[in-house]
Length: 238
Image (cartoon, rainbow, N blue to C red; front, side, top):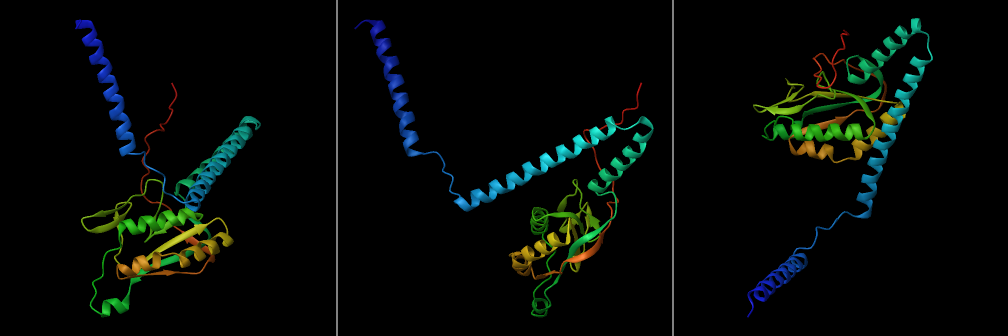
């Protein structure tokens, strides 16, 4: 048989074999399906829409600030700049804040301790999950055991001790202060936390999570550390 014909048959056989192999693997290992139900997908879509709305609101606010600068006399721009700086400090957590909110307290479950159960340190994972839910339900400013939570805050286990901003928190009687945008949102957050499974989750660790009622005025302290910054720098001019 001609050598060229043998070569062609070999190539064609290789391609056919490769295609059969791919088809077999596709049938044997179908693409992973999305097993979420409709409600879970709707919840995720709702969260994405909230983020989208917040980004649009932030863009609108920044555009309004730019318009104010452009339409204000030069001599008055200093006051506007000072006001903007104060607002940014507030958002960054560098100022003490007073407003509506609620107070949570984590303490030992006395009945379990009296039965011989050991007091366990507050789990960083559980504390972090609680913090995420607080923010998801409109918590604006949070303080944990005297430590203000900011965008650089880390909740970690360091040598068996739970820390916030690198500072160890107490094992028991930890107070969490939360400020919301309005008293109505504080009531909504209280209702959600009270009906959630967080109380059971803390009880498993021999701890009680006490959820105080919404208050019209509580105070959250300012962040007393140094904020790290990777992207902004001071323009000192030429």
